[in-house]
Image 1: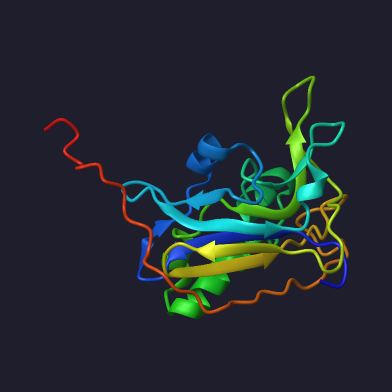
Image 2: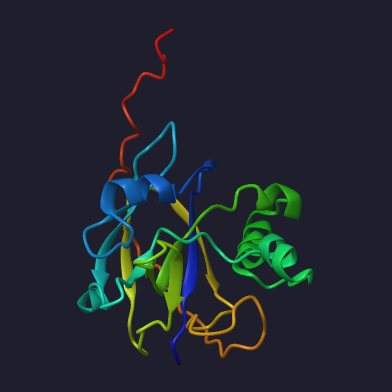
Length: 207
């Protein structure tokens, strides 16, 4: 990257888009922020690792004096609906919209069908936490530097989409064109090995 920038990452099973990243269960299994050795899990009924983080150049950051850390699974994604609710303005380049367009373009799905498959994200490079007095979610300037990266091993055949957030490093303005933004580079390397097995629960649910 050329400058500080955060990104919102969605993952799907490339062969079955109904299997997608489950941020809530990932948070329950690993914690509020992800780093090397932690996994991104898919939702029910599959509940299996989709990707494992194998290198994180921001691992040194840890947790700061405010309780902030990087790569969170506690925030959602900036979206035009909340923006409309709070400002009564339309903004079309929130991460939700960027991810919707990317999925529609890649798969040929209509915007309406693509949108319902977009889900809560891994906030790559984003520095976030909860305030100690009120327990509210906060974001602050990302510590990311040119050359930093987050590397994953794909545990299944994946389709991914990464939105460069319009908030830039998320230190000030959000969901607008005011922040300085920079491109995020994505590299895909050839993988090998068998896909992670689906969850073994028999799905009888007591019947």
